[in-house]
Image 1 (cartoon, rainbow, N blue to C red):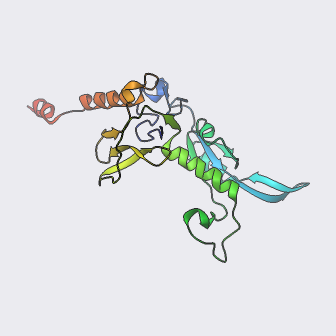
Image 2 (image 1 turned 30 degrees about the vertical axis):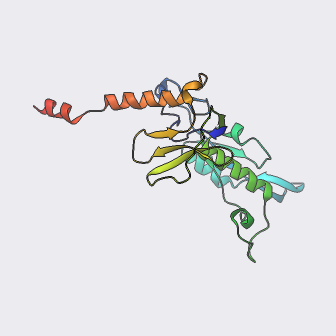
Length: 220
């Protein structure tokens, strides 16, 4: 059974030491406070004329790059391509899906209107793959043996992992600092301790938080 990882739980600052001492992101990159974030910017794929060339270009308005620099980031361009979304996200700290032509209405169950631009199939597929990977994380293999699964999710829960067939594999409680349910056996995976590490980190934060009784004793 394959299920995405948890972007909310496994953010770069959730587990491990502080960023200045060298924590790691959920994709394994070293994260330091003094390193400028690398921001990936998707690009157009259009026919254009430039110098002696009149052909297909992967290009982007310079204003996107300037805005990234003003915000303290380092811009890298991510031209449309047929594969590699997970590998790209392993190398960037943020992602911007830039403006462009209309998304093919067939992708959301509608028909094209009179003014809808011609579909850019490769770019649509590339940006959907990037967005999906950025929001659900890379797919991971887990030990899963359940015979039942959630059909309806109660209010106050957010689905944070699904199997490839759409089966709900994990939910998180919206208003809790750390509360989740998974339908696999993370205790059996000795190579991936992130779930228990996140639990331990949340426990340390809870222990370190001041309690009402402590404040009363200090006041007295």
